[in-house]
Image 1 (cartoon, rainbow, N blue to C red):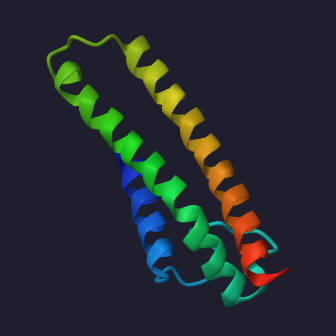
Image 2 (image 1 turned 45 degrees about the vertical axis):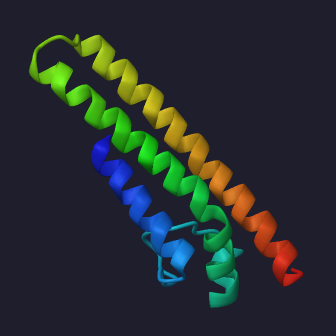
Length: 111
């Protein structure tokens, strides 16, 4: 969970700064965003804040569980439920980032 959050923050930050090159591995990869560098960078610039927020939430949740898990004060069920909830939140954040980024990029670029 914490590692996934760090990855999202990194991808979001690079996208926000215009330093995430168009690729087939990381970022918002749709036919629209892969069309050109212009659409790629615009979509990531607009969608990045959601990715960064979700990444920070995932890192925070993961770090918050560490002391309790180390002390044996957290059941496996609670850890699993937290991981499942964070997976859902990250999925929603990824979809929101895609929708917001694409919508704002289309408006900005007139496409």
